[in-house]
Length: 231
Length: 212
Image 1 (cartoon, each protein chain N blue to C red):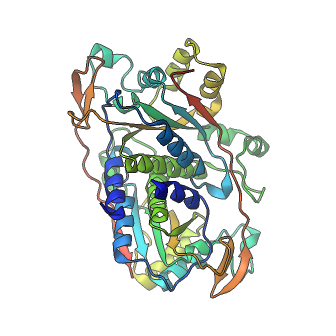
Image 2: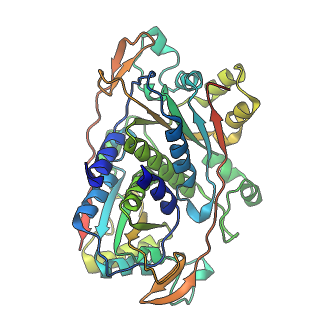
Image 3: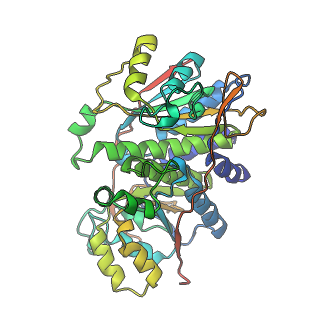
């Protein structure tokens, strides 16, 4: 297959959410390293560090996050509600964590700069535009790179952070992990979910712990991006 | 895979001069456009539109408006720092009409946040692809959108007011570098007008593995 075909297929693959995973085929450690490098080397304005990164291949942690996704609660296990966000229950997640816009606006400029939100000129501090662009660039790069490596991907930002923090506080995870997610830097986030799919299933099918299909999320309408070409 | 690892490293850095004697083949442009338009957006909605130009006059106009009028760097300067926008190929993501999107959005999502994140996702994959194909790239988000869109409408018949809630755009310059210069040297018509700094960032990373 040509380079062009590989990248084209990668974008098409990462363009659609994968909602079931084959946990018998984890993401290889060397691939996790590559994806981490993609995440931390993606462009940001003036080299600002606009986010913190959490890389988890711990299935229990990822499942904990999943059970706090907004529309699910515990419903997947009771099989009562439609659960959209099963992409979170993935073999690997990379979570991009940032302060919320509200918090940044309420801080003094000096506070923001002390947190690393400053630009080269020293006269302007990072705003929400720069943060959202940067998180998007990094997350898009990671999803694309993962697809190039042969994995499927999904995005999710629908997590009840208060519920998650409560559950995390009661868990045995390290202080470092708890502190990261309990701090204000985790008030806003975007998660990229990565793994190998259940090959016998369609990508929109949601399964429970017994591998029973409990929901099928229909594909959304293909977007039609207007394009103007000038030569 | 080696291409990908190399591409990650070069994609991080902004290329500020270009070799215009090496055009980008149509098949590569097609690949880049395909990547840019097939990356995910929330609920696969249309948050942006794309302008793709290998027209030198168009690209030069974009460069002249890639300025921040409130930053002293750009005052009375013949060649400014954002020469990445004067590339052989530029791809511009801009805001677009949200009438249809908002009519079908049960979540009532904030448009600008989704626009910024979606443009980031799309452009991030595009930049990685361009670098994997052997090109160099540079982002520019410092654009006077009002004056730029007015001039593009006047000279290229591109609607300045396309129904978008606000005017906003982001440009990625793509091409082969001018090997006579360092990546950071801002060059127009063979003349260096500024040498930009290069900055390393340090992202905090926490790992969670089953061995913890």
